[in-house]
Length: 424
Image (cartoon, rainbow, N blue to C red; front, side, top):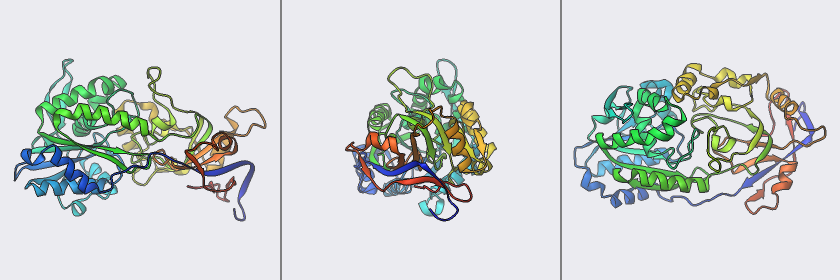
């Protein structure tokens, strides 16, 4: 550390690597072509058909390559592809806002070579037995066919055998603001008990051509790509979710005093920080959910891609003024109110600097005097392969085969502006 840096000699950190499952798809275009052949897409896709390809708001790795490959497969069969924004109430619950979300992922009409259609207009497809109406994107409904694309992953608000995946894209993503609001209206019960029922009505009434399920490994690499006929959405959602939970990245220990998160945002997780990593899901049955016990979470920044949407900020205990001033409250509140989990938009204690936030955390973790704090620094909840750990955590995990050392001991300190000097 250079001149003017405030050092805290009693807090030493070490940079480590966690080793997770590393298998990945080597050629995405080739794999997608093979998968479409498996489900005999050519027999269903007739020349001239207008085919909508869904893209949501989640930060899916290789999404440009995946969508471009699907576009080419549709064109190869004589179809006329276009991209559908399918992200519920995200992007500020506006059509233009959702297009801007896609721009952040490099998905534009220029890069994809097709038009991008976005609207909040919906049609009503029917009702569930409990009389809840099923809303669906009007542009999608008027297409000749829809290819539903989504990553299958553990949800951040509830636990079940089907969580985030193809069913969620049908009922929430393609429900636009009106449909997403309705699915979320009953909170956990709406998502866990009714989301699949909404999707079943969509599968029956809307022109769903097929799906493409995406599974990522702990390094965000594309781990699996599975093309799915409409009748197998439920089977694939279940099977890939089980596999997802087996390879889900985790923090190296379950007992943490202070977790410092360098960045959070909607491109990282639906809740800014993944609750499967940091905790924050309530009402689960025993054995369904075992997150670490973290006394204090400090967030240092919002990602550029989140465009001020700070849903999930309520999971933190401390943030800086810099984070607070980046919050777009309109976007954050529109998204949060739709989810119905209002506590996730609560504002934590706002500190002037990162150093002040750390000092407040140290004063409020209830450790006995002289106890070395258990501290972890991560870049975000998607990237858990490389992180900083404090002395006592290192001693606990040093002999594990999935842990390797990257650097020597460093002091946890702050520069003259009060910014943390350790960065991933």
